[in-house]
Length: 274
Image 1 (cartoon, rainbow, N blue to C red):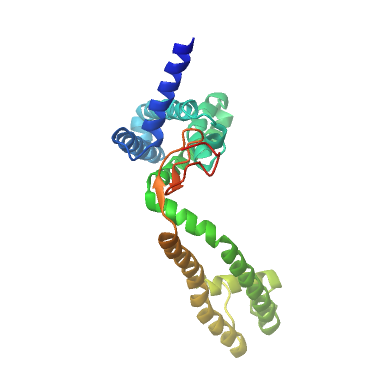
Image 2: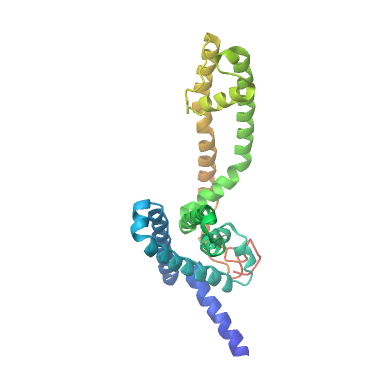
């Protein structure tokens, strides 16, 4: 019994090193193969949406999709098997993405019949979430993720300020231009303000009075500055993250978290010893 338990733990450790430790030769090989399979599966989904290709090779593409689904299912359960606390992985962002990437194929077995064809197609579109798994293999993406996370409070304050400006300007334009010039109500005027401020400019509504055109001009100029602010916030935080923190690819055997600070002895997610 002890030998079986020991053997199971050894297998868990081996699988964990292959799947989660991307800085080892087996881990790098696994990541490369997984990325290749993900890309091929995404191309398969895209080709299947082309009617002429689907008519000719539809059966082959569907069989291929099932092969990919089985492979991703094995990978998903292998990740759960090799962790001591799999719930952290199961409910993590990438754990949910992994689950969403395999569910549609199995759901299509339940939702059968001609009346459910549209529903099945909607479920099949969820497979495109598989592309999000590519992000976890890019080391720089983790730095960007941390920078965006740190920038959220500042960006929220910025968005609130933009909403206030849009509401005040929209109300002002409703008063200046009025319904006769297309500004039928305040919500439509706010819509025009947002479109103008983001420099999209659909042109479905345009100010006709000199005062309205003056406000629009000022709003356009303000828009260029507003677009640059979120980028500046994230860039500043990104630069700060690069120089103030240093991370290493050290995967936790318990929960699977892959990045920890240099010198860390315990996982900051589950507390397991590294």
